[in-house]
Image 1 (tube, chains in turn purple, cyan):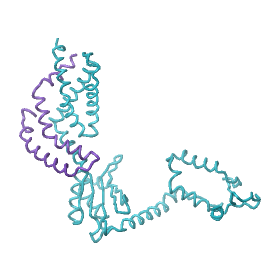
Image 2 (cartoon, rainbow over the protein chains, first blue to last red):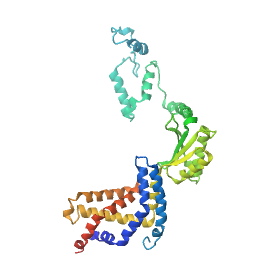
Image 3 (cartoon, chains in turn red, orange):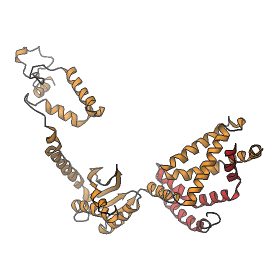
Image 4 (cartoon, each protein chain N blue to C red):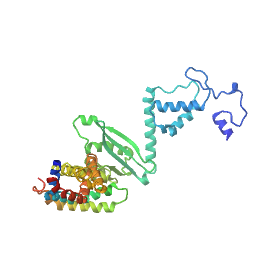
Length: 72
Length: 312
């Protein structure tokens, strides 16, 4: 039961969820790119769109990802 | 048909009356001791099966065109024919076979190349600590021809890397041979590695008609691989793996037996753990794992609800 304490602290830590949120926010369009490239369907137009979105999202996320309080 | 078979094999037709054995010269098959053993389909089949099994060959060998060609030619071999020795097969015959293959491949590549163009895919690989660079070529009549599998051990030994310049040198050598006028090659195709991407860009400049393409999936995977190596993200992964492992434990075998029948979240949790374990192979999966982790947050809330129970 003691081994549960650390993960529970992690789950209850709001900072942890914020970290996960910012990481996903920055990389979610890239994940869609990966799924599109991985799939067996033609998706060049969507691919181009989501590559643009990835670039924009990464640029927007620079501020959060460089925050030393969140990501020491 | 019977006459045709008789003409080809010089063997009496089955519809014909049985010939006198003293006149049948075609069935004169001799064994190793030069004794006449005669023809037997079962014996021949057994010998072929023995060849496949004893030499560890693939079972579909007997259905390949090469094997059928061997059998077809062997029918006309005289009794005193000796197969080539291993040194001959591994020496002059190998060189002759290679030259023949290359000549046929270049002929096929040149066929209608002015209309449809040529594509040169390539990749760097390391097989059992041996650095290699594969150079392939594809045309309308030759979907995958191997131009060269260049071994780069000497280059690496001298302290250099398998960089863009080195890959370019290997490719340009073949490109100059196939297309000296720079009018045929219209595509070079690589995976997402940075060195070959750069090599593709240089080739594009050297051959203005050519377009350099990259595998999109590999590029995306390498992006995730690179960012997954950053220290904060690596730490985050370890935390999430721990949470998922504990969530799985809590839902399946933990102190909440009433949740044991909740198949969906526990199955998801087990899947997630394996997914994270597999991320050593495919880095993008770890990020998808985080997405599923967040989507399965209700399970975590259940676990949070259990904290009061656990802290007692």
